[in-house]
Image (cartoon, one colour):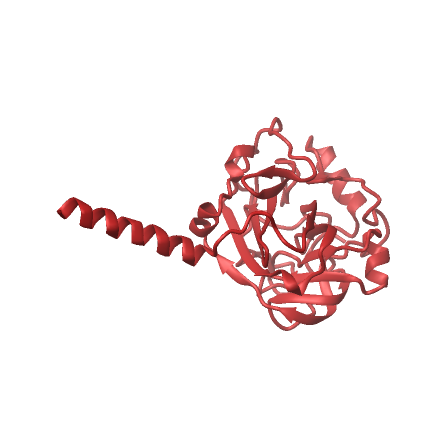
Length: 285
């Protein structure tokens, strides 16, 4: 098993002195988890390459959840001839409300999952929200790490600082050793909802600002879904690259009703357009 994904060396390494968010870092209604900026493995490069994940943020209204990811990996994935499909993408996003570690929740089929990368190796047919989820490992078919201990060792040997956002790199929430123990893709599940993708402009109107944490990856990916597809309560949410070359987790919660109702982005844009027209009419008088 090769420890790192093949590929050319990309841009210069990011500074290791970036600020770190902690669990439930709240800003303008968004909960942020900020990852280490020098723990993405892209070929021989550690930090700043295609597989660098910078942060995840989650916001809720009374009926809608908004997810935003800041990263260098696009939804088109990363071309790698050693991967089974010739392409490595994001794994699926998992939500665990059970209070158990990931493996236990997985064994009990109590995970929720979101397939948001249409071109990945997920075991479910379409993007969307899934309940009663079990997870599988896809690192072995994506030229990746066989376990987290090997990933951590590789990053540290190059002077990087492995982390998982709101979790430490060695948190027992995840299995650290063994073969094929990084569970990063949905194996089975029951579809219970759809996701709607959001542009960076729409996310900005909703108050998203990764830049305040100096998390400025080349990609900002966002989507929303109806909260009725998931329970309320505390959760840990996480995702890996399909090769496990970086990962991030966030601790937060969903409430039954949010104290801050926020209109959908389309409503916000419509209101702004209406105000602009009204202002123009007043100038003509």
